[in-house]
Image (cartoon, one colour):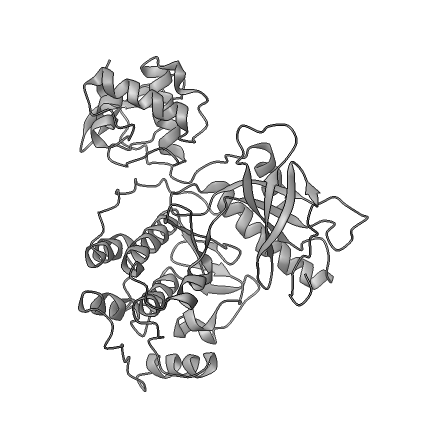
Length: 444
């Protein structure tokens, strides 16, 4: 590890839980990520390899500890509560208990799905890559999933966009993420200036942090899109400080937005709307933005997300969040749906699905107030939609071969879906789309 700076230096071969550290993957200001392999007894719910993110929550000064624990708490809470196809998945959260290694003792460790690399590495190697439009469509989809669940990322940039082995995108690094409270969220005053909107560059803080809105992520996406498609930032300046000054002048009407002539026409208005000088003028609806981005990229339209039940904001202690993650590696998902229009006489459960009246699709069985009729899921996905499909397969249609009702769309669930589709006279492709959802809810 000579010559490199590590927030948490971990030697090769170090063991934590069932994981053994193999090699360093990446480092940032607040964390270090290592490749690890699963050793010892087989763990059916864990992958053979994973990325372990070490956050130094057990060392440093008391003031640093408070800040680092808050960052860790944000990420653990978000990843423990959300499961969406475009957000990096957390398998479990661990705490190092090793007094013999004081530099490690007390560190929080997030066990995450392994990525092949990050977007910033791709851009360093190939500015404005040919795959840029398709990548941007997936990034925007992830942003929509995050906003839809009531969170603001707060630090969207190429380094926090991970590319998986199959070429798909995951948003990552949520230690600056914040849950919405009405129209605002509160985040620490740490971000990346090149991707920070003008109103936050020199914003005031109170005891809860900086007030931010989802439009902060929209601005960051506009900058990201311009960088990916042209290889350059949208505001002039040879340094971060110069570009931040240009952003401030632009917000005050003293600087024009000079988009690169290399920016494709299909993207010009999208980027311009994302980079409106004030948050009131900025494109705030990520669902509408996503459709525009998918059209510009020539990508197929993603599934419409279900409505969410309003919930009270809460902020559990780090210990409670980590304990919850340790007790259940597949934690609760925030895609919980409104239940005002239910026609069921008793609350539905996984074991006892109940009838539900949908204004668009009519009556159908639900196994947990999940009104999804057109949200496509397939092998490799996870979340509440997967869990409900498993419940319906097992307890409504008697296909016990589905395996555990755990919210993970694995091989057993895929085989069970194929069995049901054959029984229902549908295309047996193992993908739960609108036709399969309708049959799951109405047949029998």
